[in-house]
Structure formats: C-alpha cells, structure tokens
Amino acid sequence: MNSIILAVMLALAVGESQTVKVDDRTEAKITVQQESVKVNWVCNESNMTHVKNYYKKDGSRWNLFAGETVDLWFSPNSWRTHKVVYEPKYRIITNPSKNFFTAFIGVARPSKDFLNRVEKNDTNWSVEWIFPYAALETSEFTKPASKKVYPPANYWAFQFNRRSESSGKATYTKSPAVVIEIPQKVIAPYQQIMMYGFAAKNGAKAGQTVVDFTLQNRSQAAFNGKMKIVLLEGKEETLLKEEAITIPGKSDKAVNYTATLPEKAVKFGIKVYVYNAAGTLVRISRDLPVDNPWVAF
Image (cartoon, rainbow, N blue to C red; front, side):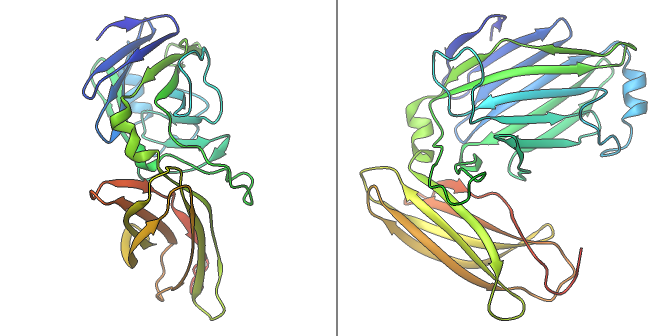
C-alpha cells in the first residue's frame, strides 16, 4: 500500500488498497471489495481535545461547510486517462459528529446503503465509508423523462479533500485525482441492470401510492432473477411484492405497482431490490419518499 501524490491510474484486485496522502496530517485509503469500495480516512489532529469537545454529541454540528470535515468527489463512471473527477459524480462529506451528506450530479441523494462510521481517537479522528456497487445511482433523475442511465464503469476517479479550523486558521486541502481500475469480473454483475424513472404519486383510493420505474437490461443476454419492492416505515422494511423477472437482452421492463399504506405515524418510503439468478443483489434503488396520508410531517 504505497502513498501517491500525483494523478495516476491503479488496478486493484479484491482486497487490495491504495493510500492517498492528502496533506501532512491526512491520509485516505481506497480498498476494492467484492461487493463494494471502502474508503478509510485518518485525520491526525494536534488539538483533539477541542475536536472531542466541539463535536461531542453525534449529529450536533450540522454545518458541513465549516469546521472539521472530510470531503470526497468521486465518479464511478470515469476513464483511465481522466485527470479530474468528471460528472456524473458524487460528493460525500462527513464531520466528527457523524453528520453525513451525499449528493449525485449536484442533487442531494441521501443513501442508507452508503455506510458512514466515525471515531474520535486520542491523536486523530477517523472515517470509514462503504459504497456498495449495487447502490450506485443509475438514472438521469434531474430530467425525469430521460431514459439516460449511468452504468458503473471499471474506472473510478477520486479527489480527497480535508477542511480544518482546529488550529484557528481555516484550511482546505485538495488531493490530485486518483483513478482506480476495478476488475471486470467484480463489477460485471452490477453493469447489466439499470433503473430509471423511479417516481410515486397518490393512488385512486385514499391511502394508496402508485410507484413507477423501469428496469433496463443493457446486456445482449437475457436477465433472469427476482425483484423485491419494500415499504419503508421509519427504520423498518415491509415486503410488498416479490416477483421472478425475466428481461430479454437489450430490453426494458416497466413496473407499475400500487401499495396501500398502513395507518401509522411514520415517514414512508419505497425501495426496490433486484437479484440475479445467482442470488447476488445487483441493484438497490434509492429510498423514494412517499406521502403519509394519515399524518402530516
């Protein structure tokens, strides 16, 4: 695991890592895993007493554009020769109080499937992020009628940034772009089924929500697997529909589903999971908020 200071392309096998030196106090490590990419930050800090006191309570410091933060731009749709992180890209930010922000193509897209862990230690604070391949955004949601999709590529570009004010002076350090190559056999299962047009509206009857989306098979080969549609009830998930699906090569499958919402005082959402014939979870939708017809939030 070598530190790097210049823009470079690196091929990483499963379990291999690459460390990026952001500045004299900050390192970030990229690790390719079988089902995800993991990023670990170590932010050395000479004033950890202040950091621990200021960020003592989880979630208390909501402003991620001031104070202590780690800030990542990354694109899972890059190319080996890229020297910067081009769109479509994510921005991921967190701070020592574990506030977590994710955006895709400039639009906030919170994802419960992107994991964020933060620890405050004696001499540093550290962060671990996990980005599952199946949970990557695939659609042009800024243009709902668009059928444009973004399949995850073999090449991912990263730029690591750290903001700090603990010394009394505000600093913001940016690393050069780093491109990694993910083995084709690892990313291939997640490149076949894309999803677009994910939306919901009120149904014909009180308490109903109608969900629409389209699954797109990008491969010449037919896709065989299953789909699950679940209702998010606060932090709980309830299975609404499970169905075996077959999508011919280079074809789309439009889905229209009507759900009746239970009378509960919770925030509702809809989520979709797609599994291939081997049982691998290859596509996870974002959490789609739907109106609670019984309680106003």
